[in-house]
Image: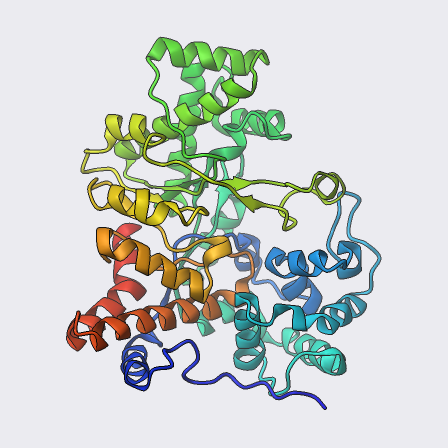
Length: 470
């Protein structure tokens, strides 16, 4: 017998009746506020072309590494899920791939992916039966039917979701054609880019040389000289600002920064440019470039984001067969206190500078990040990220940071997703968890209800607009 699908109105609220009632009242005030999404990885071509997706597998399964990493962990081959490899998209029938997904849907019990997907299925597509093997074809056919309608084109969904602002993320070697087309289309949706220069900073990346060639072509600078290289970054940052960007993003392996003398920096770049570098040089160059990017943020006002601490592509065989971003990234232990000192010594007290810090190492919240953000005016804490943007992860984040950094040294929520349809679900989870946490403080007489209501709104829209200069 198939199971019903129902989203409980009190989901994620406290089990204690008093706290649950407070959370319910707080959520009623903020649940319908616009979505502000200042950091993510949706494809700007969707909005430039007002795309229509072809089928459920293409939209909900193949792009979502949260989903297929769980399936892979249970022995499901990526080829059986129609996940593209280096050799191209496998010949797997999309319906067959969806059936495999449905047969294994129980693997997601208790996970945030289950919360997000059930929200999409119920709220967006109107299902009242749960996804399982017996309903796989029902889901596939109904989703495909709706995707063929004008209401499910990218711009219509953007408006339906109530998105006020959406930032994508592009590399320094991206020509930004999609963002140009969005602006020229006359459509009113606010979709902007974010400057992500990792591809021309991480010399260990396998596509570094190709990215540098495009970087040179787009800027007209001699990117293999230190002065020309820095000038190229300034030109590209200006291009990104013209395309609406208010922020940069940096996904380095560590949070290490450096502040070398001009001569030392030029000599280091000489080794990078000549190919005579080693692993220590590669790490030092990434460290120096974080400080260079911070100094440029002081100049041009762009907010800087740092997302360190992921061991990328841990599964070597999978990387060789299917490439990057296939669910094999693993969190690392990381240091912020010593790592950030060179950068903070250089620009940490400049009122024109904002640096938003993220971590995959939760042990740093109370020990390092909250005390740093609770002191340096330039520092803000990004929300629970990636492996931790779960109900439990969000609660741990609040519990470990609020006592030292408070609420107003944080920046609200951002979804950091490639899965466009999950954006409303992810923001809804964050809003419910914030109401959960605030309700506890009210019940313990640590906050007045009016204060909690004001905080709930700030955590939903106020802090993110302020932090990202919106």
